[in-house]
Amino acid sequence: MQPVEIKPGIYWVGIVDWNLRDFHGYAQTQHGTTYNAYLVIDDKVTLFDTVEQKYCEDFLCQIGQIIDPEKIDYIVVNHTEPDHGSSLPNVVHRVNPEKILTSKMGKEFMVGRYHPENWSIETVSDGQSVSLGKRSVTFMETRMLHWPDSMVSYIPEEKLLISQDAFGQNIASSERFDDWISWEDLKQEMAQYFANIILPYSPKVKKTLEQIQNAGLEIDTIAPDHGLILQNNIQNAIGAYLEFAAQKPREKAVIFYDTMWETTKKMAEAIGSGLSREGISVKIYSLKKWHHSDVMSEIWDAGAIIAGSPTHNNGIMPLVADMLVYMKGLRPKNKLGFSFGSYGWSGEAHKHISNWLEEMGIELADDPHGVKHVPTHEQYQELAQKGAKIAQAIKQKVQNS
Image 1 (cartoon, rainbow, N blue to C red):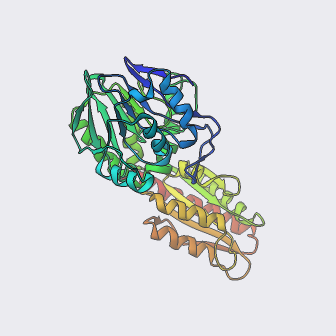
Image 2 (image 1 turned 90 degrees about the horizontal axis):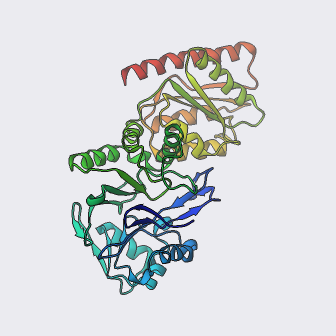
Image 3 (image 1 turned 120 degrees about the horizontal axis):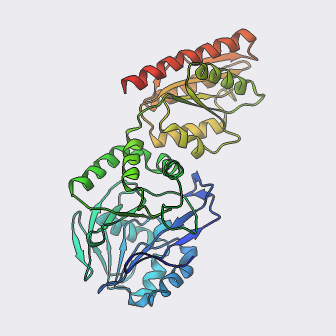
């Protein structure tokens, strides 16, 4: 794609990855992504972030359509993760910048990841400003959003926040701004990104947004490192991030399961019928059909997480174990939990799942429920009643939240 001028003298020079489906090795993206980088033409020509190494030549060509890359004076590294920084050694070799500006942890990570030799790295502190000429840039550390090195860059003269991974979305498109997509669709993409990357650091999100508001920053453009640049939905996006971080439960339940001979599947459907009968929105996911990141995208605002597995070798099915491990790392809050499963003889799976949920700090809505062999009609009715009982507990939790 061509460079795009997003403000007078400020350009998007990133890369569109149309075919990416595996994001960071643990999440899926159905719509590709972008690796956004920004070039400011001023007395000190400044490049904000780089791209993944395999796109380095394309990236330098993007920059070359505006200015000779060797005329870049400063490179700002807001985040050293490889999708934003793995091309940095080659870019530095080509550009030979006067300074590389990054956080203290950014320098530590840069040294550890890229083993620089003779790089002019200058660390910046939280709140520090650097003059670029007609413009200045102020740096704000945002540690653990989502790495310890993370920071954002604010150009006050342009009311521009270069937000690094915050407010990002995995959307590959020829459009650069948020004026072509509905807010509902954009929010859904932001929620998926948040749920799979930012969620464990939810308390930091609220603190960081308060820090930005207390600093009195005027913002009319948010330029993240992935996806669309925000101009029409600034307040919507900030409000959505506060909503995501609060993890306030809705009258919604997410059921995920794996099954061998479809008994556990039928149990999931019976529980779901009881929930929906009481007005609870229900999402049911077979883990053979859905990736764990897709399921996680629905969990962040659910009132209940309901997990099922048949007993397999005295334990749980591998895909259910995968989902539980993934979910535990993302640390969802304000949820009820319930486990179920079928078994032929030993019957441990539903108990193991219940223990996992408790270890995550999830409040159990009821005791784990196992059925030996294939449920009878009466046992399916009992499962539906369990669903109805959990529905009432969800409503109570939502009311109290």
